[in-house]
Image 1 (cartoon, rainbow, N blue to C red):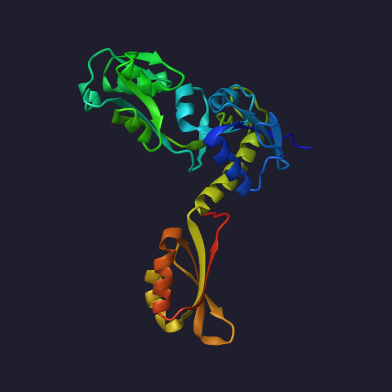
Image 2: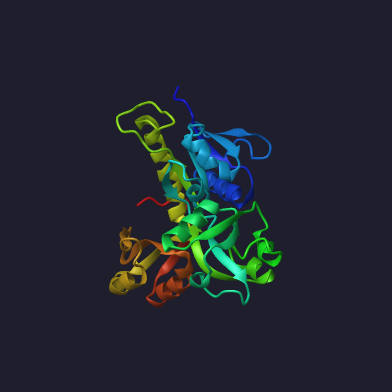
Length: 298
């Protein structure tokens, strides 16, 4: 029997919710939810390990897990030898610089040796180093917004989704240091090897992780898409091509015992459904059907 691959997953928070939702839609719902157990089966091929999101790059790099889902911000901060195998489209946020209103308007104005409070010291230091600016990092584990108000630091480097928390605390954004989203990571592959080691994964494991990537990306690709079917007059096919561009143009199928109409099938963006239906009705389309797409492969 093939040994299960171990997939490290966040044990709490929005990353955990997004990862579990994505896996469930890919047909890999854990047998046990995080919080109740430290591990759970994912289908027949994988085992989930529920750990802190910030520890997942370390687990993967050291070989305790074969792959993991976490934030790209945490991967960059860890600076561990792992590869991003897929971007998963949820958990989006930004690491930004912020200062009190009226202090500075741009990172270009920051003085040499400015104190910056952050829980992302490596990423922040790297960003300023690339700009040729010297800073003093003040490590914090949370609530960085208070630091400029109590004299702990001059500026903060912190994660934001909407920026509303900064405004509530009298801070303004100066610049975006990095953008982040959930990613699937694995150790670098070792071509020609069928066994795994902390230095890299073998070809067998790599092949199975590639299958996992394909499954997850098919779910991500289907988000925001709808499958549309309609019976369209043959005489309106020229107009139809402008209404239903689809992925590669609409698919046209003859309708049995109907010489006047053909069946048109296409994938459309969710946001275009309302307009598309009205345009189809305008050219005489009938039997319009819209349905969700669970997976979409290129």
